[in-house]
Image (cartoon, helix red, strand yellow):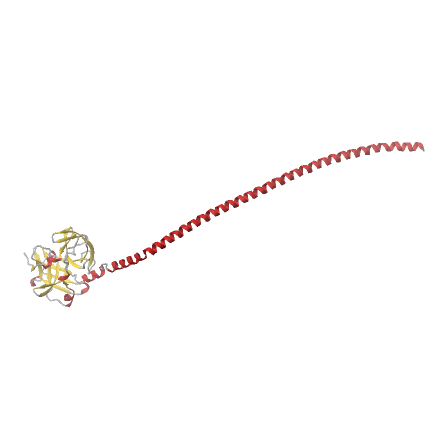
Length: 333
């Protein structure tokens, strides 16, 4: 019996050592594992702490940036508001100045308007003037043995020796071709108002006694139209025009309107003996037509020309007062 117990005791002892060793190993491994895990936790804690610190710094930076941005935005807004305020103040100041100027000039403005209205009311009415003289301006066609001539004229009532003679003034060269006087001349007023004939055999084709380019056609049997529209010699211009005075030439140029007058304007540009030089265009067929001094609406003269090719240029106006001289019947010579 003692023998068996001793054997059992010897068999149990080696297992106990092994278990002890195993427990020691487990303890060592557990310790090492704890240390490793503890290190990992510490490292993670430090990393988390650093991250928290960085986050706190970022939050501070963000707050600083937001604050700076707000300050910058506010500064820009303040600058713009200040600029707009200055512009508004300047505009208000300018408005006040303009209102003051307007108030000061109100009386002057009314005066200027009145002066302008007076000036406009005194302006020359070209339409009325041309319409008035148009009725007195006939187209002339003179027949010769070998051809014809055309020109313009002006109807005038002459008081000679107590008798009123109605005649159409025109250029002498319209009535004469070379050494021959026209057989007859037809006088046609605009709008078919009347057609009249002056015949050489009746001594109805006349020229001035002096050496002027002026002639006239006597209307032997005047009717009511002739008596009503004829120009009285009191409408002849009495004063000599000045250089720069405006004139209107009325007649029937060959390149003008067909069957009606053509009016051209110009100025007095010079003087030449009994002629006035004008810039108004006077062409072939316009010879003998009316020239009106606009300022006084009076008959200044009859248009004549200096021949240049087929056109009549360098226009001259024969002083109408030459028509006050004596006329005599034209004859062949």
